[in-house]
Structures are given as C-alpha cells and as structure tokens.
Length: 110
Image 1 (cartoon, one colour):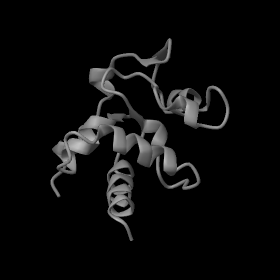
Image 2: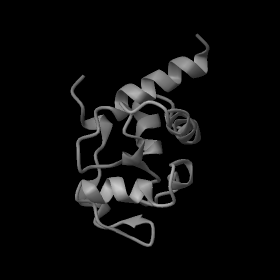
Image 3: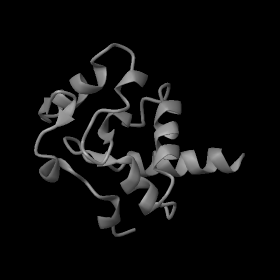
C-alpha cells in the first residue's frame, strides 16, 4: 500500500463520520489528519472514491461551501441533489447557512 493509499483510506474514514444533513471541507479533513496543507489531496481522495458508495463524498465541499467537486459526480447536478435530499439548501452551487450545516472533524472525541 502506498502512502497515498493510506492517506486516502484515512480521508474515507473521516468522511464516513460526517453526519447526515451536514458538510465539511477538504481543508477541515486535511487539518484533522495532521496534513493542513493537503486539502487538494483530500479532493483527489474524494474523486477517487466514486465507486465506493460508503464514502459520502457529496458532503465534502470547499471552505466557502461551494460545490467545487460536483464535476466528478455522474450527472450534472447529482452532488446538489444528494445534498438537497438531506435538507441542505443550495443556491448557485453554494451551500446556504454554511455555519449551521458545517461539521468539523476536530470536534470528534476519538
């Protein structure tokens, strides 16, 4: 297993903890994993997870709440549809009331 594979697996473990109806950011996951400057790598992990239904990649957005990863989902609006089905309001590809919907993995007691 390469270092990237191990990092990706750790990203997936954290993403599986994101509560239904909540989102987090690439940077928050990277920071939680002790890799603060690796937000882009978290994004790569989310993209690589597209064949794993156990990884809720749709719940990971950029720090402003933009659906920057939506191009990696099948269907033009699948990421938005998944989030809206969880009660998250989106306008112009941006989550509304991000502060209320944001989940920070740093709050975990693990």
